[in-house]
Length: 361
Image (cartoon, rainbow, N blue to C red; front, side, top):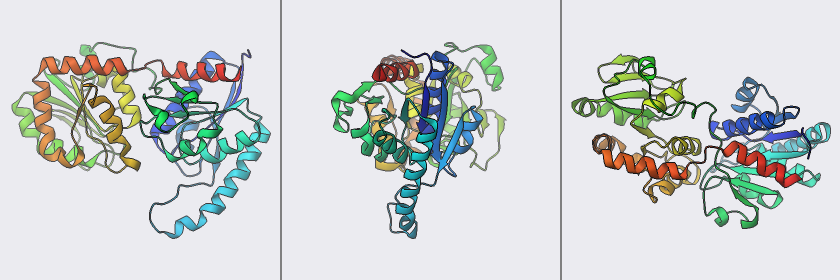
């Protein structure tokens, strides 16, 4: 077994693909510090910024997805695909990877397809309970497919599947219990029940509007909020009688510590973090994602009595009531915490890397 590897990791487009990819890269470097890792992403997408910020080199491909409506943009897709396949071949020929890892997203397709044709072992990591089109197209070329949910043999060959979980952000598990310093950090009262509201870095308009419309109800029940609105929100930020509102929470480890319940979208990474941390959660899945996969992610937990679901279309009317009912029900919160914790796989990064190394040796 080697103590160093040359690795190409491809994919991106959203944080749900990029952050797991970086976590896998960091785990490889932790276990095999003499390894060399480079990334391949889609030019102009957020991975071109986030990956270099994490300390890794990235190559950009001229690639985009197929638009689901009639548009002239689709006319350039064949040319983009040919260009990306050719550039992927050049990258692989120059870099000479021991294996490649695809995490989903446009760039993962050409890179991993070409790697398989050049005799390089390909590994996939699928974050969602309903896989993206790229990973579904690549399944026959993969040695192993690392997944975060059971019953993924509906989409992938059963003999290739490994249940590893999704890598979560480093540092979230370092402090299990809330401290006064965590409350002080957000200017909150440690004597009050706290609801953490998150909708992603851009924000979730429905969640923001539902919280705004139900502030009086929450205040009447002595509930305080730590509310991350996302950068697209135009309201006022700061500390209020009902809690703290901010565009972005840098210290999510502290935010999770003090949250008695969490209101969140149901992206794969949010679900994985909340499961690993054992947080009582009300999911408000985004209806604007492919194949409605966030609802499928949430239902996977709801069916196991591990979370609550408030559909986006009902949030403005029902979310406030759901929050009040759950924050007032200690037994229900405890049940949700215990059940979601059973589904958490906090060592996913190590699991994935171990499976990959086992697969090439």
